Image (cartoon, rainbow, N blue to C red; front, side, top):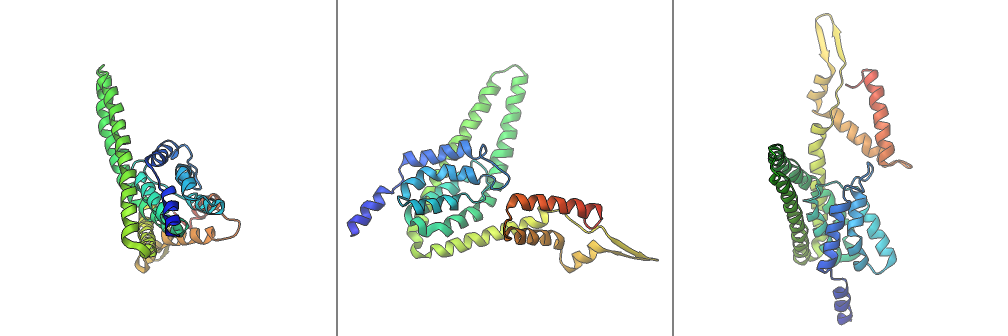
Length: 273
C-alpha cells in the first residue's frame, strides 16, 4: 500500500516542463484575460491548468480545483509568480485538502506583493529605463531601444525566479508544518483582512457634506462622525458591499453598478460628497 502511494505521488510530481508552462501562461494571459468581475482570476486559473490536470486524476476533484482557482485575483505580473509557485507546491503535496490554504495564500499575499511589484517593476524600472531609452532614442541612438528590450528581458528572468522561489518555499512550508496547514491558511486570511482594512480609509473617499447652522452655532456632520469613528462612512460602504455580495442573484458586476447608481443619487441629494 505504501509503495502504491509513493508511486502515485511520483506520478503527480510537477517537473520543470509543467512549471514552465504555468509560468508562460501567467506571463501571457494574466492581463489578456482580465475582467472587472474576477480581474486576473481567469488568467490565474488558465495558468494553473497544466499543473491541476497532472495533480488531479479524478474529474470531480479537478473541477473543484478549477472553481477554486477561478476566484478573484489581482497582483503584479512579476511578483504574482511567487503565489503561483507556492500554490503549485501546496497543491502537489496536499491535493484537495489544500483548498482553503490555497485560497487563503492568494488572498493574503496578492495585496502586499502587488504593492511591491507595482512599485519596483511597474513604476521604478519602467520609469528609469524607459526615460533613459526614450532620451537616447530622441538623440538618434539605437542603443536606447536595445536597452528597453534588455530591461524587459531582465524582468522576465526575475519573474521566472519568483515562481521557482515560490515553489521551493511552498514545498518547505508543507514539509515543515505537516498537519498545521490550517493555521497557515487562517494566518494568511488574517493578513488579507488586515490589508483590506488598512486600504479602506485610503482608497474609499466618501464624506457627509451636511452642515447644520443655527445662529452662531455650526455643526459639521463629518467632523461629528470622525469623532465617533474615523472613516465610518467608507467602512459602512465596504460592509454594505460585502452584504450585497452575499445576497442571492448578486455578483460583483451587479454590485458595482448598484454602487455607482447609489453614489450618483447620494451625491445629487447631497447626502454624500
